Amino acid sequence: MSAPPQGSARDSVPGAGEDLVAAARDIASAAGSLTLRWFGRRDLGVTWKRDGTEVTEADRAAERLVRERIGEQFPDDAIFGEEEGGAIRPDGRTWIVDPIDGTRGFVRGVPLYATLVALVDPYGPLVGVIDLPVLNQTLVAGRGTGCWLGDHRCTVSDHPDLRGALVNTSDYNTFEPSQFEALRAAGAMMRTWGDAYGYFLVATGQAEAMIDPVCETWDLAPMPVIMSEAGGVFTDVAGQPDFRNRAGIASNGSLHAAVVAAMQSLPGDPDGG
Image (cartoon, rainbow, N blue to C red; front, side, top):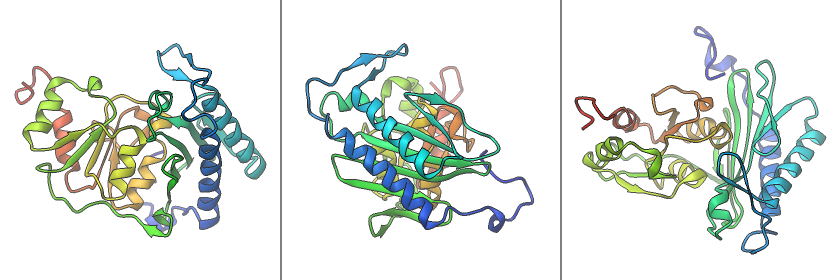
């Protein structure tokens, strides 16, 4: 589900279409707006999942709204969400939903969480949306339609290499020390504007790379089409273009190979410390 078979022309891959992109944007925005009812409250109904992460009433309500809207507008499509599960349909279209990306920050009143909605088809990611409810900003991209923030078409930065590049991540605890040191040695400026907001910064040209060594499918599903349509690149940490591998690197493209190389710097490697 990452690329058309070899020999297929790019023009033969179906585009998203503006109406579909607009529908995805509106669904994500509605769910994001719903989460604001809970944001900043103390009574969030927080419980803990088996993996040790938080989930709130807002997560569940937002995903339920997304599922209801998709069911009304696209009844033949499958849905795969963080809170209610599902599966990606290999021979059709599947909506992938993360109702609150950054729940840990959300419950602590951090305003950088996002609602993520993606649509994938047999060719790969078709539409991707990052909705930032508190910031009132929605980034949307569709295959062949560009990457947009409101009326502004977004493009990645033209910074050429890691020296002086702004590189974000969600959690340094997911790095091997040798990986982190390789990035620092190359001159990268490391920050933790992470989760979907880190990808948002790359797509809008405000950062050069975002690295998630450990995450989930729903965290990454919107990112390949967003990055591609903004002129950047998305792969996993091994350089493979598949969001289902539960690890992600997004960049402006110019320094992507350098970021992947740094992430291959592991203990015991000749260059890995």
